[in-house]
Amino acid sequence: MDEVLITPPPPLFDDLALMRQQCKIDDDLTEEDALLRVYLGAATALAELEIGRPILPQVWERTVYGADGVVKLRPDVIGVESVVALGRRGEEMPIAEDWWLERGRRVICARPAGAAAVRVRYRCGAWRTPEQVPQGVQNWLLLRVATAYANREAVLTQGREQLAALPRGFVDGLLDPYRSGERL
Image: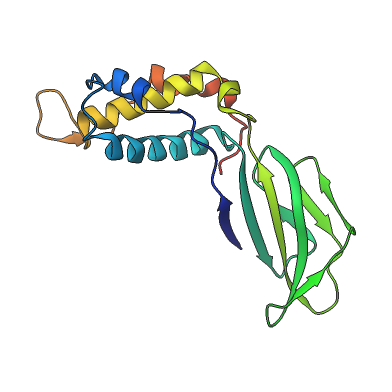
């Protein structure tokens, strides 16, 4: 199975002012902006993994080789843009309208004879706009970015010279109400 991000989601935060405030960086100090964007990207990917669903709309293309006509998609499918079969040499074999989306998670299709794979392009996202993303998810992202900015590496355990992962606690609990029960 191959999966490729075709269109990334829009930015959750219009600018970095809120992240700078969370990290206690003066607004006029922009040298760390690139680093804050990297941390936000990593925090967003981790949040999506934790809650098992994409946060904002994004377009993916999933190709399943040897598919039996069932292609499992990421959660929160908004719509399917195309479904095609691929021949053994990669040539496209249109499936027309002989497919359907089941429970918003799986595409069921009649695979044409001679098809080696099925490719589905689809749009998914738990919330349609940045304004609809719950405050708990936004707070989690801001706290993760600030923690990454402040520590930049694993955390030293108190009184020891050992590095330890950040403990799960209140911050991770902010995502609990939005978990789908599946991992991406």
